[in-house]
Length: 317
Image (cartoon, rainbow, N blue to C red; front, side, top):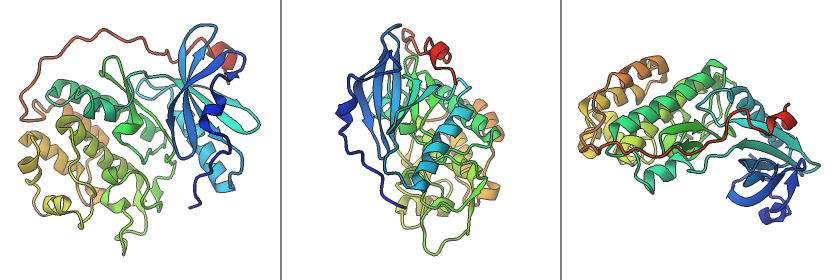
């Protein structure tokens, strides 16, 4: 695939810029391959938003198609409490600005690794995982398959108690796909890997997302990944493939959760657990880990951007 298009202007160029007469870009939140995410403030209401600026200049037709698909699929999915709200799309001659709900507590990755919020709290880990599962099922019911489920693409609010799915950059509406190596290596299913020779000429999008959810479940409960890559070159994955009781020897998993993970990490995608059954098993799982449990701490609720914001009256599609 062609390399990402790099804008001729530095990301800082747009700082201070005001969109639609009221949305001022105040800070850079992140820089990705295809765009920049800014913090913006509505100067009329003092409400914060995240604004994803996607460069339009010099894009090849294929890149422009991917950009439009990301916006379209996110817009289709965004009417759900577990998906980051898309408030409005604004266009300039060279940039598409996607105005999004702002989640000041950041992504799930930093909440797991830096704040240590979920390890030792099975209740919180279970609650958050079920929210993520519901958001993914909502997308699947709409014929949207995320293909890049990972903690970096899940934002949290409400003191870490609420999860919101974000970044539909690799999402597809194809139930069966041949886009190999799509996503992040830690979270890819075996059938999605760029192996040679490939075991499959194509793979199903639904069980691929289910696999990624399994890795996220291990992240939430254990604070680490089960393996670097789900392929037989990876010694940890190879040990799991040979012995389904292997993971509890290296991770503090309850036998109950290990049984569920075995259903998620089923090597044959056609036999992998579906989301409805997975929800039922997680709800009924009393202990996710063998880790000593910390008492839940009451955290003051953080104000979050409502799905229908003050901007909506001006920016309604």
